[in-house]
Image (cartoon, rainbow, N blue to C red; front, side):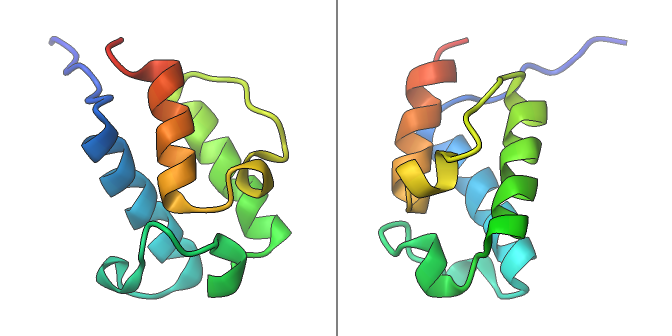
Length: 88
């Protein structure tokens, strides 16, 4: 059985990340804008840490616990992740 390569394009990262944030916020992904700060949507530190753990697991990374605060929007996190994993 062969593994399918993980799509690390910026678009794929943004889509996945938006879906995960929507899950934590319990709202439709279509309602989320990539340039709005996650705290403005109500993402708290507990969910922020859970999101970081999911990102680390998905992309096989070790990230700072301040990721969601250093890169406060979906667009900012996407850009940061894409610089780390894009083109893998």
